[in-house]
Length: 209
Image (tube, rainbow, N blue to C red; front, side, top):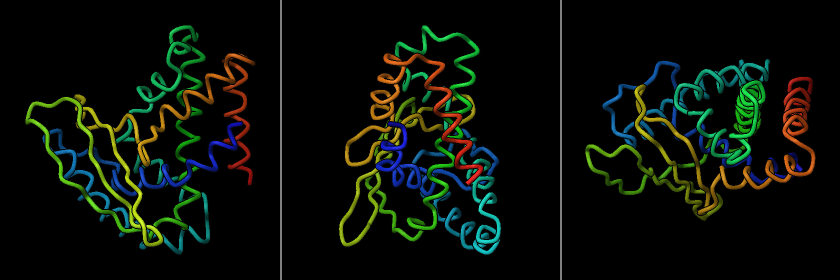
């Protein structure tokens, strides 16, 4: 079941990557969300071009770059809490930590493998409006693809370390909602440990492959 949902969400993972971050140094806390998205996405594309040969010779380099670039700008723990919903509250501390780690690897490795297919898409930034003291905002973009556009929205909140992404929606469909349904079914039928085991197996398969 995990493999099925990954097939349909690969573009989401890549677009998250292209539109949010490029360097491992966190952005200043006072930078506006859309400025962060706009500025770092252009630098991200430059970085991909610079690393093209290295990635071709060593695909693992792509995962390293993705991990270094994305982690400072995504709150994987908050995403994990929202994805698991009520199951987060009933999970043990050990299960929570293992899930966060494997969920992070899942996202990083999945959209990393899609970079070569989607890296040339054009990003359109839609008008952004939010009060200066807003703690949570949505940055809306569109991706030009094959003569049509795909709306992508980034839900962000202002943390003590600056703006962080906690959810992404493509064509109005939330990443968190998609995974919550799939993971919830696995937990209900097989338990939390089984879900984590499936994530581990999926991540190891990508690494070994």
